[in-house]
Length: 474
Image 1 (cartoon, helix red, strand yellow):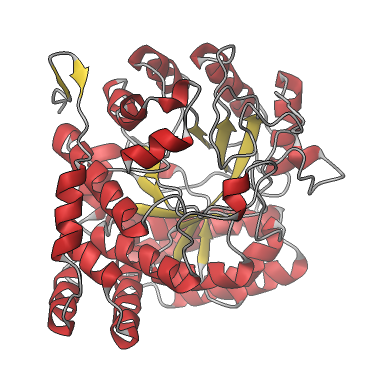
Image 2 (cartoon, rainbow, N blue to C red; image 1 turned 180 degrees about the vertical axis):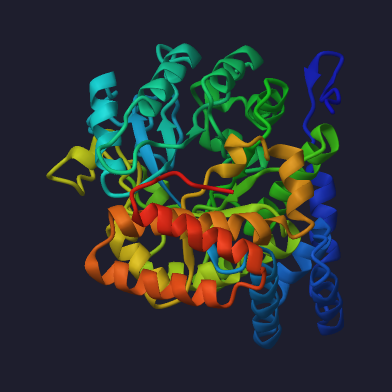
């Protein structure tokens, strides 16, 4: 469903500052009545217009903020239930030719220990991750002229080639790398990547250009159209994000929503995921210690909630930048995917001296192990951790996935498949306490399962897992 996103061969800026300013002005000092009307619309699970999202973000009535949170909680439960997708980032290289003023990987940072993993080192990292239970990875790359699409494709093959002694292999590799041309994206598609992820960082072009004065990343429009080129290459699951703290958060949220709308307009489907990292301290990145637009926890919780209301069927990704306690709050109001046991530099998972600021991209707020994260979200909150990759292997992606999601598909397929992958984790990787609380949660889920036929299917497959079978899905 491709449409031309250029005019006379030139990339167009579909993030129109004048339009966003008008939407922000329209939403200034919203009345309680307007907020209530918007929340009633949000309950229909059809999304919100950018100016409506702006009005919710600009609300200053704390009681109405609580109503925003409550509506987000209800919508998340209605669409996703108590299922949470779990993944880990794997940093392949911190070599970078860009000069992002907020990033520890910037080229000017001479104190950073630069490292690019060899194929053998990649496989060692993957073995560590597989042996603690991960099945879904996000590969992260700096942008360097000697490390292009062919090399990235080879690293993906390296990851997929590793099979552990327990329940096997990495089943989905997502990519966070610099924008490529269509041919480059096609090479990644051919080696079987899942989602292509790229953050615009800031949708405010003057701010973007101020913070990216050198290196290929300085081209705002080339980055803005990365998702379009990925779609053209056949990658129909794409993930976008903004780095909060660089500019007005209301503007950034509206930028994300306009970007999502443009993708849906041009390709028939919006982003598969949206990320919303907050600026964190990084080695020799002064701006990271003093964000131009600091976002409080309360404001950040509203951002997550409003995104859930505005794009109800889009996955919202939470990283370990936030601390453990605050992550629990954010899970309630909208997050559907989270990282666990994350480390943010090449070779980190094999490094016995982990927590080295001279090599990592930013400071991590939640340093718990994967098992501790799983035990917490299961035992304290009743979430079902999911490593499911069935949809991707059965072709339920992109526009097809979104069509199914809007008809209750996630509850019919994703929850049972999530339970199966959780059972696999409990059998092969969990500590005794995590297994205890996990088996209790599975028992309750099966007791309450409304579809007797699906319940029998799940029970039978879990028995097969206990007998030694793996990778069972619907």
